[in-house]
Length: 236
Image 1 (cartoon, rainbow, N blue to C red):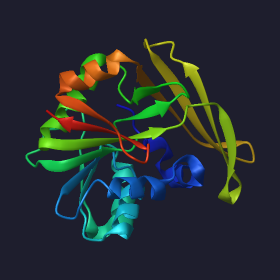
Image 2: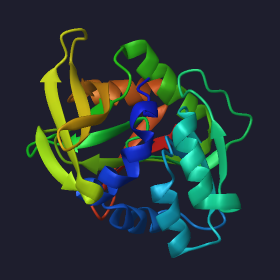
Image 3: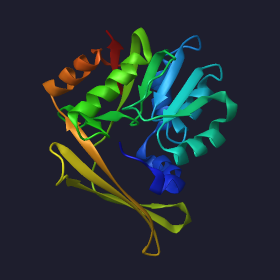
């Protein structure tokens, strides 16, 4: 499972620079949940999405999990006691609690709109781990519970200036190690001096393989939401 420890100190700086529109995503999610439901974000990161949800309705019953302690530390500062947080690896996670809604805003995986189709990108390179991770999400949901997964743009090479004189860049190549995967390297520099660097591997599922994966894990597709920003799956 990919970890974000190396770039935790810079994560918010680049992720809020236009990488994601958390307010837009939270607005879409808010049409699908209510304060009476329990909501789990898988891969809560630094808590940016849940922060936006709380601004929409402070009564939401929210929980966030992540396997990177450095990210959870930032999320705790951001969310305080308004959200329950816990550290866990999604592949080995076993939760005694069950939720009505689960969200992956890139935490476990995302759908990527290539312009002609939507492929599913995950942080786990092998089939067995992906099935197990999705099964663990299903096990954490009540019967009929919903799993909401964000849709994002393609992973491309680019460079972007950030506040404080920091320059963020990313490089994407076909993985030389894993089949059907890409390697994505993040760089943070100031005055051409490397501040932080991290490489992630993403597994790509396409076409029928996506539905086979989710079906094997215990989910049924409900299609996209009305905003077109989320794919919705229900627990069988």
